[in-house]
Length: 313
Image (tube, rainbow, N blue to C red; front, top):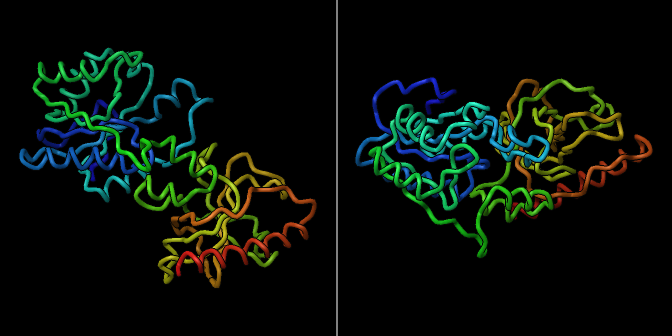
């Protein structure tokens, strides 16, 4: 899949694009429906199946302290879209210049000039342009004038409620992984590269693979039973994970993902792992001593083993 950064870049050829527009955070089943529609539209004409997204997300730029935790970093989004057959991920930098574009300028400069859109697929309630003043009817009229078609997709429902990134965040926050899996169409995972740690877990009998996630906020936190993908020789290794700021041992400013793999001995430094969350065991806690923390670690590991066996049955 081609990755294009910035609106001043251009396609490598003159093919038109069938475009899906949005943050597509999580690439959930609602996003997948938009992409499937765009893919079907692209086939007769040979148009390039393209997703136009933004970095940072508009809310992250406009109200950073109120922006919700991301479900995905850009790399994870790239991998999910690539698996769906998207041909081009176009990442527009959301800044003051893009924010100030009128709906008419957005259509002319972005959709027509840069993306060469022939079909644009959007969800209900889509807004665009300065102060989100452009609405679906404006885009439809602009398409008729500029030579591209606009296709408005109804919301995808799950259990009679609209599928959304907000709903997925709510499910993750309470550890409802059955619901998040239904909404995403796959288990929720976080990925990262294993880094060297303080080796405290090793001295306590629980060596961990530590991953910095490069996020200040996350949609979940606590202690979890997990499956880990990417461990050489172990397609889906079982383990117990801590996701948080480690309050007992001094605390971190940035969340750290620490995974103890059951029945595994080896060096994973530099390995990129994907951690699948199966069940939440408890919230992160500050213990009065390392002995108290170790006692709880024994309980957590045993509980995680039991839950993972049950999930596999």
